Length: 215
Length: 345
Image 1 (cartoon, rainbow over the protein chains, first blue to last red):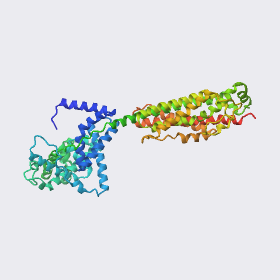
Image 2: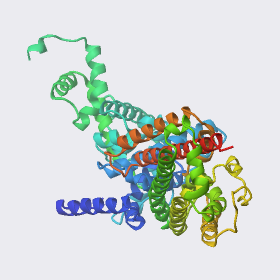
Image 3: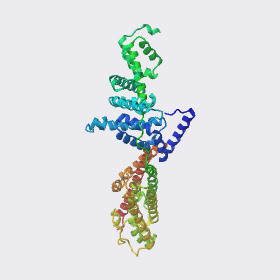
């Protein structure tokens, strides 16, 4: 989020490596520092995939626990991608379980739990904050319509800003598959947003960027 | 430009463009494909519109607000203790198994050495009378003849406890306990070996007695020994140390089982091997040893930090134990049989 200098980023990367090495030797305190760094990303991905705060919190906690135990087997590469792979696998399991038990209904999932949960940016006015809330809810509804593979891919790419390579590592598929999943997910979301233009208040600065059709 | 003359059907180009707009937007596209997309975009308003909408969609998605983390997901410190503990446990049984194997190997050496020296392979064909007469009469004092009955049974039982010694440790759970058990296990194993070494001569002499036929009976009474005299105190103390060490190790180990621990097959395998008298037993034992050696060789050059490799080494050691135990049992019963069938009338 904050602009970082090259040197700053370098220092953080070195810190991360030494923390990983210590955690691999069983140092829980070092691992918990990694948890502090990555819990935001992991939880947000889980929430966007599952659209349920409790389920996302459970998935996040389980992901960190199994990451700690699997850490001796971590052989370098992007630690973030490795973590995200663990959490997305957990999310897939939860989605499959929810599919098998349709009684834990979609109604529960539809409940809007987002109200007070957005990160409050200091530079943001209350109006802008409200608009962002609306936007978050609208996008979530669009994500919910996607099949899980496409949902995960577009969340990692366009919400979390991962590269194609990182997404391939996080989801365990080929680059070509990432490309096509992302293409299909974006196309669907584009249609969804066009269908639901009325969800956006008139003059929304974000939707204002959306070109009128047929010009 | 050369291929620009060849115009593909418009619909094909349109579909191609639609499929690649996302990658084009991200710049993740080969220069050749990029040219093809751009050529179509220049002549298709619908695709230009689609590209603009796609760009807006991605821009919108990037604005998705991040959620506050509802709580800290830091792990409790106790999680680490479990993992280091598990790691420590990977090594202890290995050492213990090695010690047990060495002790059993010593037992085999002693028994087979004794067999070869005293009667040899020829002992089966030749008349054993002079040899056994030598034992019974002049060579050894009658005092030793009596020690054998108090010590013979523990020695005969030595093979099964030796094999069972490492088992309690694999089922133990907490670190300090394990260390204690390891020590106990090793001392019990080695002390048994010492007992065997020291009482080796009387053991062979005791062979005519029927006590050997009973595999796990209570400590025998010196009834069948020739010329029995009161039991000498040193042998008695030796005998008593062995049974006390083993039960304590087992008693402390049982209440704390670990899910990772695998039950050791020794107790079931050993009686089967012990029952085999004849060529089958040694052959089986030798093949088991060879197999174990092969496994050890396969595991040795690889890094030792992998769980799977450690498992392989442990399995190999377990097989070594079984093989040694089986070999010891076979040799033991062979010597019993030898003595019984050539007993002087």
